[in-house]
Image 1 (cartoon, rainbow, N blue to C red):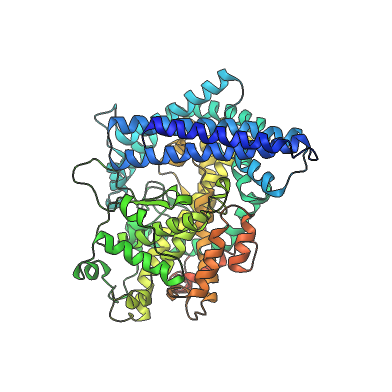
Image 2: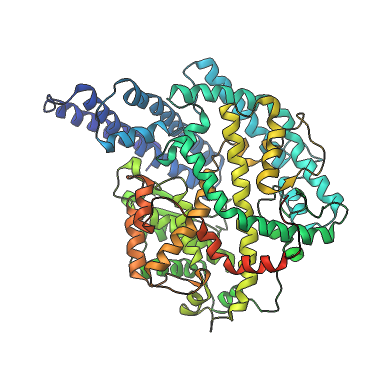
Length: 609
């Protein structure tokens, strides 16, 4: 379908819906006129956004799988049109939620709220300020992109070069140099960020929110303040595991860097194998576990059995089918990109696509290699695909996750079931390894996942404080490092001042991507996994549980996924776990062998900071 056809198809469908609404007006005399107008507004908005999003998704998929200047132009145009309309409808929705005081059905209220939450950095009505906001965000994003790609700085190292130094070097001077080089460019955008916060807050107030942070937290079916309190409650449940991990890692790093790492204080932020110290697998050879147990070599088994990209996906599909889900639609196999095209420039970053799940047009974009990591990633991405298909019959505004973290959580729930017992069941292992072999793998997983939670807390707490005004522009950097010390137990490797703007070189901050979804997804996946294992009647250690072939677990999962965002996420969670709040102790339960081992290793150490 070309753009002209899309344009006229879009126009005709909106015109037809408008006609139907006008016809229905004659039979609606008994209803409050403004309430009926709200219903018409929602119906038109849904129809319009569905068409615009489909157009943008198709154009973006085409651009990423066949990168040409023409495809790039079309994708940018379609995305801009969609985002522009989302922002406009967010403002239009406010008149029904704030000025009329209407008695509306819960479904309409929920849809109006979703419309009002559609924009991340809301522009105010004032056109000059709206333009200034656009200029600010562009400057901040361009600063990050230039630093990441060294577009205008031929002598600098690209992001991947600096990140590699952090991951593989053990030389203190090299690590310090890379850390300083990456953080330096943010100094130039501090004033742009300050202006952006001020103007975006005005836009949020016009939409009926206290500030931008309150707008972001309002995605969770509870007052923004209560959601912030939930963050603290969940972190308190996980903190003992993080503290134990921090204590062990600090002890091992002190042995390698005795002049830099203290016995009892925070850890210098540049020594943990990652630019942001948000995962610690890069230093696993220093801090990891080697108990002499051989780890299963899944990559070799996959290659020995001749697994192709399609075989990898078929295996993931079989997992879902074993739970009672249908097979993937034929269009999935025809329209997905599973391997890198030889004759095109393509983006290989794995992603799941909901072009039009209502019409079963779902796709996977991935350059699949035959190895263990890709095997896990395929299962994760199919979690998204099956989520799209599960809620495909919901109205457009409800075709998304129950809350911003649910989609990632569902994908990761399936990854939790890729256990040795599952690999035996599908013929990739001959026998289940001894339980002693679990510990190194679990510790590796903990090094990857648990520090991410602490980083998520820092990013969100800092931005919420900035948007609310609790963190002033004169105190940006000091507040950043206060939070990093409090939650991560880290301190900067060189003296910092308010001339620096270290938060500005974190991607999600430069691009204004809310980070709460990652924290919630990480906690939620373990809670759902625990509940589904109980539903499946599994006993034994939680990390050894796989729900493969459990129709009971599949039925519970399918029902929850089918709701999309049509109900408060706490209702969806209740259907999965029997509770309306997340229980982060499921993470501690999953990593129980690691916690026991850490407690032994930390005997005699002064933990904390």
